[in-house]
Amino acid sequence: MKNVIPQDIAEVLDKLSGSGYEAWCVGGCVRDMLLGADPQDWDVTTSALPEQVERIFPGRTIPTGVKHGTVTVLSGVRGIEVTTFRRDGAYLDGRHPEQVTFTASLREDLARRDFTVNAMAMGVDGTIVDCWGGREDLSRGILRCVGEADRRFEEDALRIMRALRFAAVLGFTIEQETSDSLRRSRQRLRAIAAERIYAEFTKLICGKHMAPILREYPDVLAVFLPEIAPMVGFDQRNPHHCYDLWEHTIRAMEAVPPEAVLRYTMLLHDVGKVKSFTVDEKGVGHFYGHPQLSREMGDAIARRLKMDNERRELILTLVEWHDRVIPRTEKGVARALRKLGEERFRLLIQVKRADNLAQASQVFQKEIDRLEEIWANLAAQSRCFSLRQLAVNGRDLMELGYRGEEIGRELERLLDLVVDGAKANDRRELLDIARRRKGGAKGSTF
Image (cartoon, rainbow, N blue to C red):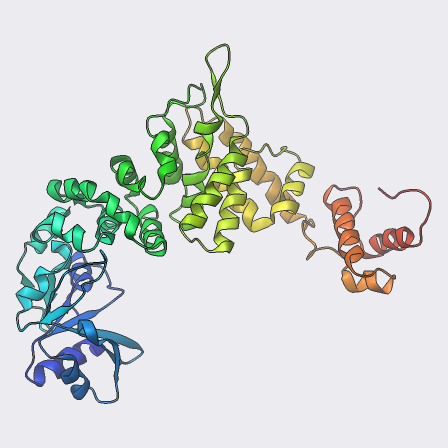
């Protein structure tokens, strides 16, 4: 256990307690310290009212949520949220209490929290207050609601996603009643803002233990991702696949690093298979056109989740390319690098490898190895794949008389020549080609 409270946090606790009030670190920071991890966020709860906190720290407070008892105290390089002990009133919007009642009881404050492992407090001297068995649940790796699970999820439906996220990140088992309750309550997720769902789901799929959660709770996830429901148990009827479509997807997600772009790519790469499924006369399943359909469906999903444009376009490009055959030749790899760029090509290699690792046969790994080998050879030769690397630029073409859009078109033509190996990336030679083309020389250089 790490029970060393940072100096600036300890200062806040000491000043509050020195002024006659209780003051405790609370919530996730206590959980993380007991797990031996370094907390990313520190929250303080106190018996002092907001106006009393402001008097104790004159000129160092921001009234960030006085209605709910929260004042941010500026200490060192960060702000520390200090919240008065409280009881929550009714949650009419399924996210926030309409009103709160301040209380002098730490126990009452801890009783309103979501899970037992988040309902512990720690004093500046390391004393732990644990009214709900959170420490035992933490040691056993169990996630359990504080009090009645149905009530906790009724108060704040985002707790459903938080439960799944904590289990995926920490590797915890969701206690049976909590599990049953979040299933019963899953339709409440429809009232939660897409941005909040997206934030929690992204953390979930990047968790080290995300696979068991995806296997166990597809019905919950399908509330905001209905496209995955038909994937569960879907027999692909193809010799390349020994898993149903959802299991293949999960295994492909496991096979990439825990980075959001790669995890979302593998989640979406085959989402179009159900709609594109056909069976031939031999009873073999096929999915003609599924990469493009997966891109289209993935686009709808990403927009629904309010994913930012840059990430969305990168993921959709990888989805569209995941099943595309890249010739294992210098020209084939160079052309792919030309279209994708080196960073997206690097990601695509990881996507292709993960897709194959989640199939019945892994013979394609050697083909992927060959693509990487060719790429390395091209890089060693300092081969040109992009306009940035081309030996001529727009200013050069302007001096030859090119104007407006024709500059871009000519640069693209010259780049194609270089990428295909028809011409060297030689400034003099490329300028000569562009000069003759602009001058209307007879005969084509292409």
